Image (cartoon, rainbow, N blue to C red):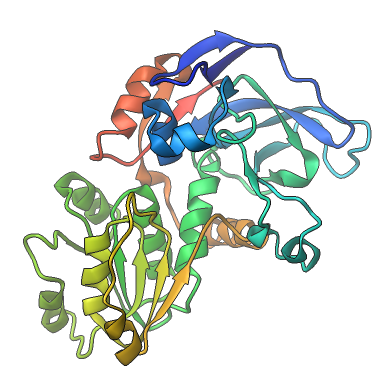
Length: 341
């Protein structure tokens, strides 16, 4: 079968022939239909310092996917051949304190598919049955393929109740836009999304996020009067990984404001903690998804009418992976989905 592989410890990826995976008793074999390209995949492609530290080679990459179950392990009883599925890409140990307490998203021994263990950018993919999520409602395959990053957005946006609150989202990449849409759908009074990319701000506006601003041109405080805000933002969702964006967010929070941090800085970030202390702000780190509570929330949001399909701006066959990665890395568009069907 074909798979997209980091063949050797250097920049670049190769589409190569690899053996079709064999499954164990508690695994399923999935025919991959769509995959989404993530920033992690770009880091691996570029072979930056993070990838050099973490990623073994050779390795099939990728962690965003949907597909159809084509084979069941001998011990799998609650899934069926033909099911349309995605999967949780964090493999947890099951024995640490967090896992035993049912908090698998906090497992200190997590292994991620596509960068620590073999991933899903291939025609067939083997996954433990306990990590499989069945799509029981009608979901477009392109949207099903991005349930992983959608889960990041939902996990972040639901850290704090948004009903009636004023929410600032920094970073209008695909996950930032989805988080802003979730906050808006959840009843936030105002949702402001900021970014330095005019193309991404325009994408956000086209999806109904009317308060999309470039902070280099429009100070965030200028939104206060037009939005009838008196004291600052109640909730901040930091999705960019920019230290400057985080500092700007802190400066524009109301006293007692709450900030959820998903964006990962490329380097250490300096924060004026006196503002955190004297303004009584809460900072909450976020990673991954709650397994599987966030997946349930994602499905319910879509069932209830939330539409995230517009965040997907490019669709290409997997054989054109080089162009797909170039588009995904240009910082101007939305999600890029590759078709493996």
